[in-house]
Image 1 (spheres, rainbow, N blue to C red):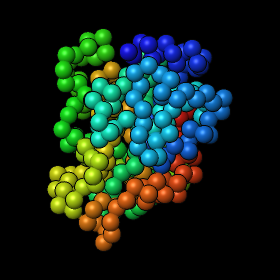
Image 2 (cartoon, helix red, strand yellow):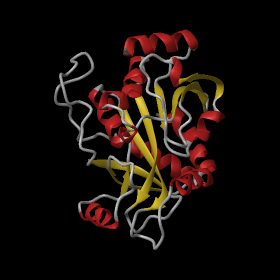
Image 3 (cartoon, one colour):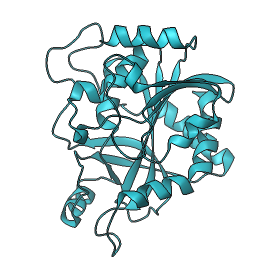
Image 4 (tube, rainbow, N blue to C red):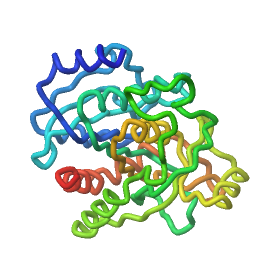
Length: 267
């Protein structure tokens, strides 16, 4: 199904991007800033799963950011939506098939690290996979990558250095930390957050990790940026809701767009 998806996309756009961005909950505004924009609804692409989560537009967008040709996944599929692991990473597989060699993943995350604050941007340095699955389980497709891919530099140290330098030049605060992936869709309990903090997690969310595993499997370089849209359960004396996640994404939109626009040409 991946070749059919690639073929359909190539009939809709002449773009040949080497860089792609995956936009998470509430962060879709960046796609609307691209020049020479072409939008393809996921429903038009063979095999591409629909985005059902609120805050995910569900379209592939090609265009230019900072003069650089890119592809943008405005919305993603999640395990909690009932999709199989292969469907969760389908978009990343297709991007690689289009020739993309670097992907910037973004997401909305809960802040576990007590030094973080709501609305902060955090560069992911590593992850802890607690989703209960790995997208590489099953027969290995040797044409995509090796049976046992190395994950010691899953989030490229070279790209992280570029991101830190870019953020510093722009005056955008950018922390760095470890992301824990849970299956969702329920938010974590306070006890689970205490456990995650004890094992070294700074952030928690329900996405990104399967995609990063699939991308590394294919030799695609990865960078990931979380927006701390809420502090995790038990950190503050208040309940968590998805509207708060989306609202915080809207509040950090301008800084987020400035960072991505400046960063893309350097990748």
